[in-house]
Length: 346
Ligand SMILES: Nc1ncnc2c1ncn2[C@@H]1O[C@H](COP(=O)(O)OP(=O)(O)O)[C@@H](O)[C@H]1O
Ligand SMILES: [Mg+2]
Image: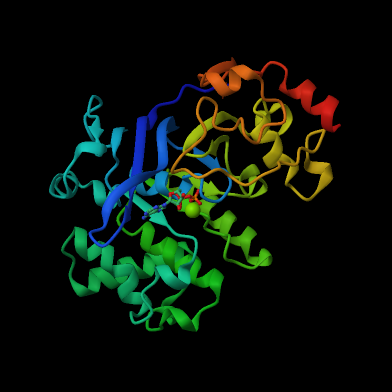
């Protein structure tokens, strides 16, 4: 079952705190703990799904990995494919200059949720796709245009689309353009941040198929961010579930759907509207809102919404434990969760 894998990226204790400022002088009065100690390995060639409710830190994780912003603490270890085998870069501590000099910028790219805002409305498609190439290498105008045409073909678009503006396209086509731009610099890793969430349902499958085809053809590795478990069910081989700035469960996708061990994962699965795809057992409906990441609950930060919380959950933070091969969970009651869900909600 488990094939040997190589880690392309390893997150170790990754934190990102955004200052909360107040008053005339905008003094920092606290921090939004968007990421509060993430440990996660991303295997070369895989599509790892990152799921969780809005505000749990998924986008912040993606942006930190590709260094759109600098983390507050922790390591982002990256092993480039063409580097010597022992080359490991810690992106967390590299300066802008260093990231550029090591060619990291082009190797790690991101596709955002809404192509309407992520594509410059005043630029022609030709220039949108050419821009990242220009920033990386010097190509003659002929060679550059050939490369742009090749990229457009890879995402199912043609020469006719070169001299048009983003608003002339449908949402699906705009996302294709965004994907062409993201793969323009021969990246090896893409963060896909809810890439289909802004699209009509009828178009979502086409974009998912395109992404899957490109992953295989170009040997890409994906971190696929979504709040919707079903979107990643078919495209991801493993899923990481986040809650309030932490990963609470990590497992092969099939195990998440059949044997989730964290109550929060069960709650996410309960939110899936088609009953037949839900695991047998029960439907947990969580009470209460997600607590603020400015002051997350102590110990297990899910205890305020967990139907099974005990005293220990309010007193001690559960560590990640491997409960089956490749299946990790951070919950004091992981061994009983499936039965509890069935008994109380079945
Ligand atoms: N630039 C920012 N400044 C302050 N807080 C932010 C910023 N970006 C995100 N946050 C906060 O960090 C938390 C995680 O946000 P985000 O990573 O966007 O979550 P998700 O993508 O899972 O919805 C949220 O509480 C959000 O409000
Ligand atoms: Mg987000």
